[in-house]
Amino acid sequence: MKEIVKKSAGVFCSVLILTVLSAGIYFYLTSSKQSELDGKTIRVKEESTPAGGKIIEVAEKRTEPVEKELPMKMNEYDVQEAIHGMTHQKIIAEDKWGFTPLTHERVERLITVVEKNEAKYENAEIYLNILSRWHKNDFTKVDKDHNAIWKLQDGTVGEATGIMTMEEERAFIEEHFDIEE
Image (cartoon, rainbow, N blue to C red; front, side):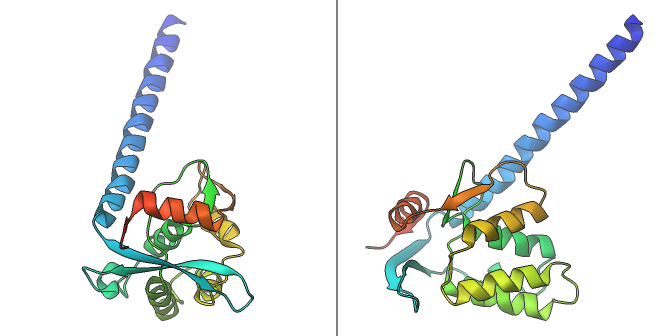
């Protein structure tokens, strides 16, 4: 009996160590994505929508073409990551990893990438529905968009619980990106 308890404890410890290491690697990789964005300068302006609402428009000085950042041969997971990272600018969630400025240029490029690869992406329709709305400056469901992608990625932490106010979004942008005045 003692031998079984010792083996079980050993297996438990091994699984625990593996889990902690995996989480560490995940956080390192996702935070390194954030550091790639550090130093980029973006402009922020408020813009009216056709429905009479207001949005924050982000324009950035790019150091590389959007085609290099979002290549035509992106795999489906990378498309999910791009959309997911852009939602973080607008959603309320307890935890967020990875931040990508939500720009018209990225949205348009992702639409092109998804349309070109529609046959090989299992969830192309979901991506195109989200991106098409965003292309029209409709972010009224961005929290649901986040959670749709989050669920596809088997998310367990960081579910969106709402949409930020413009003031909260501006503060988030100022905290995570270099703003050009």
